[in-house]
Image (cartoon, rainbow over all chains, first blue to last red; front, side, top):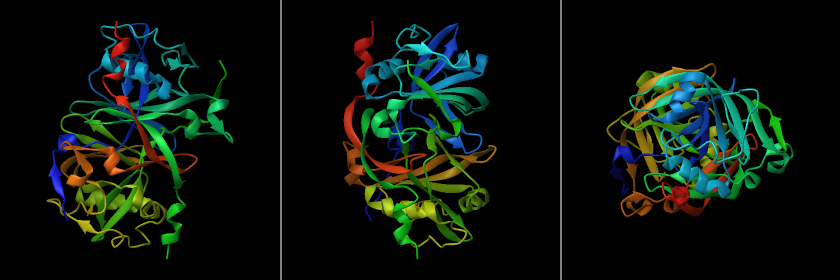
Length: 187
Length: 187
């Protein structure tokens, strides 16, 4: 065995899904790039996003609403831009075409294949980040992103992130079915 | 705009990173397949895994230690198998070659390119799942998975999951640098 130990600060997931988190801060729609995100509960469906001390947090804390939008590969530059500049200094409200569902403080991105409006369920304070846990109230997509009434990742064309090398990656090929591939190993 | 609303229970991330969570339950190493996982804190590095009521939870609750192992594509069948059968009924301790760092209750998988031993930082109870937040104490890999002293996803060859269609996916091509691609949009 040739295992070596590396720095714990360099530990990440491989790869991480990229999303754009929308909020309303100071009356304006703001979007930030986030890759520390996961679904965290089965029923009700809950998601968590781990945010450092960002401009976005003010909007979520105040309005208790936010959005998660999944951008496709055509939106890489705009997504990256949202991660490069803070809403504190730059007005990002005009970068995307924004629409709203029933939650007036959860700005949704028309260009994104999937947009989810959340009400805040809980905010867990961690030493540096805040884990915002949200419950989806509305999920928007378009027929063209679906196959047999289910979202189809090959049509959604999302992208992922790796750290600390800081690269974006497309989704590759299908490797088989989950909860099925391993059946042959059952005794 | 041709947006349509879909069921909130069908909302997931696209795609989700697949990991194997290791624990010691009843004196035996046990591994479960998990895709609801993310890093959640910058310093100290913290990770969260969202687990339903599983056999694994007993081990984490009791020992306050666990592991996250990132399998490569060659381990898809074994990973899927770990998601199909419960440690409650099936002894999964012999599926992988297991090794340990300094944490005796965090079994690590030799075959996985990346293995991280965690001490439990906090457990957040959600309506169905428990969000186990852990602090990495040791991260193990091998030189062959690195380029310029950094983990290289093209060498690690991890895979991802989509739900509710339940498919596994490889990582595709490099799409550019994060915190750089969007610089051209800066005014």
